[in-house]
Amino acid sequence: MYKLLLVDDERLILEGISQVVNWERAGTELMGTARNGIEALEKIEMLRPEIVITDISMPGLDGLGLVQKCSERFPEVKFVMLTGYKDFDYACIAMQHGVKHYLLKPCNENQIHDALVELVEELDEFKSRSEFVNSMKQRLTKVLPHVKEQFLKEWISNKTYGRQDLEYYQEMFGMELNDKVVRLILFRLEGSYEYEQLFALKNIAQDVLQETLLSTTIGSYLLILLEVEKDTVQNSPQLKRIAEVRKVFRKFYKMEVTIAVSDADLMIHSRSLYRQTLQCLNHCFYLEEGGLITGSDIPSDELSGRNDVELDEEQICLLIKAGDKGAVELELDRLFNLLADQRVDINVARSYVLQLYSAMIRLAVPDERNNFTSGMAELAEIRTLGGLKAYVKDSAARLTAMYDRHFRCRQSLIVDKMNKIIADDYKNSELSLSSVAAEMLYMNPDYLGKIFKKITGEKFSNYVTNYRIAKASEHILQSGDVRVFELAEMFGFGGNAQYFSQVFKKVTGQTPTDFMKSPQSN
Image 1 (tube, helix red, strand yellow):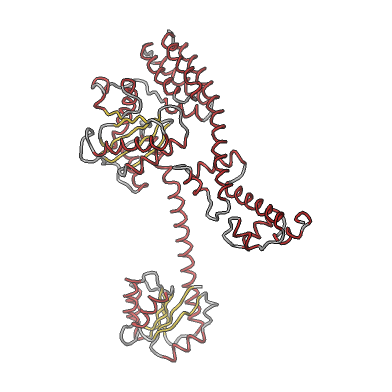
Image 2 (cartoon, rainbow, N blue to C red):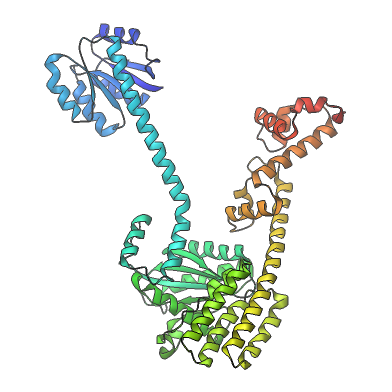
């Protein structure tokens, strides 16, 4: 039903229309009446009707003035104008303010009914269209962060992307990118790490670095695109904030982070900035673990050098972590075929392989890392490209299987921790996947939900509901007769006895009352 206000300065007409029109049948509800435009404006502000039926000729503020003021203050209100023949020109002016419906006096209830039905259909269509647009906006809002992550990942790795693509995506994201001066920050966790730790690092970085434009994870790295302030890399406030990210993460997780900071340049040149950050990370061999490296830390001749072969060790490491043995083999075949086709010098080829192997070592679990590390010396002695390929492929296969076993075990530990939180807090009606994620510090609710379902076979919400009903059933068996609203309050349903009863019956096949009367409860 749409709320309606009726306005006319003639009392008989006002009372007559109020009584003879079947408002409900027209899909409306008469909320009130007014004798002039001033009174009507006050009631519109108070009652907020969707429809106003008003006469044009009224003392004080006439119908046309009312329409004009409402078009400024309440543009969503729809009008039906009642007009005499002499006022037709005024009706035309009203239409310029969006009024589409008018009735020539005298009019009967059928004419008013037909006009209202037509207007209600317009309002229904507008409402449906608005709900669809809002739904699409909500879906876009939910998926947009993932689109931004994927865009940055592909932008710095796909050479075919150009200025036109950048303009398209910045319009989609509602943010200026094309002419921005940016800096890339590449974070690498030192030692063995888990996905949620990389996710936590990302959240911390976004909290500390307010000038973040885009961010994404690439294999074992976290990449952040920052808008550049008007200062140099050296001794800049921005650099101090970047170092603060490392400090905060180390405080929570007792892990070191190595950070590479690129020079500043236009967004269109960010691929070269990304290569610079990779070179900075490779240079960390000469520095202490967990440092912060900028282009000024690297000799200019080393920094300006360009790789002839694009080594995508992040992608290979990502496939290893995913346990996709076949995809790892294909990617390694692609790399070594590229080295062979370009007839790369064996020492240069070995440097690529050692770079890849170093990235693989960081994926190894601590107990096996020494074994993998010793392989560096063996790789240095191999004299053929085929020998390097065989050694790396064998190591990658072992690491893929090892990581997969470790990953499955770690997921079980996460679910065990979630189960403990459920057991401790199931009586709290506010218990949710988001609240559990908050307790586990910087964890992603979607990620936790997927792990939980993978290990338990149930959605988190279903599991909690079943757990609560099981506890309620135990309580009934132990206590005997107990009031349903007390059970709803005790077992996380916020005192909603009706909802508790519905859920209890759905899970057990009986209402709480029937369950209390059953032989098992006696």
